[in-house]
Length: 190
Image (cartoon, rainbow, N blue to C red):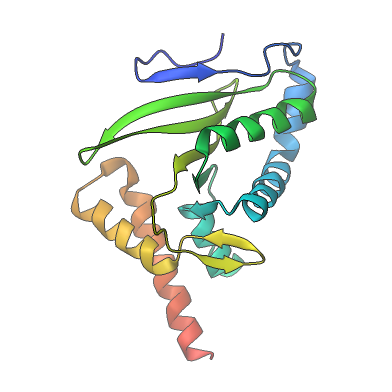
């Protein structure tokens, strides 16, 4: 059975008609996961206008010299449930088995309520979090893909630090440092 035991989580599994994933299928997918998922999410973003934000966006914009390892994608979408289901189906069909599902997570953050659609593997590894795209979202485009601008990321990370979001502090500080170094060296080597 998929899913974490949490009252705020509802499991959506469109791959229930597929066979259970075998160890061999899971290991094969895990070995190609990063390349495969990146390609599929980037293609989807190009076709839909989704905006990638968070660590993956910072990595894409600052380049390999200032990259840090990140696991999952954070995506703003006008149709988050639809796009999460699309990615779930692509992964399941690629593997040929029911390896992934969606966790619809309800949240109440800073007085605003919403739903996030998390594409996760059966072993609970998160692939991507799809959130509703806010109106007037800013973005920069690189290679046909929309990303959260570095200035917006800095503002978000500073807010995280000020509100002491303990779980996110190490990555927020690291990302601020990466962005600062990138901007510094970019200014020098113009």
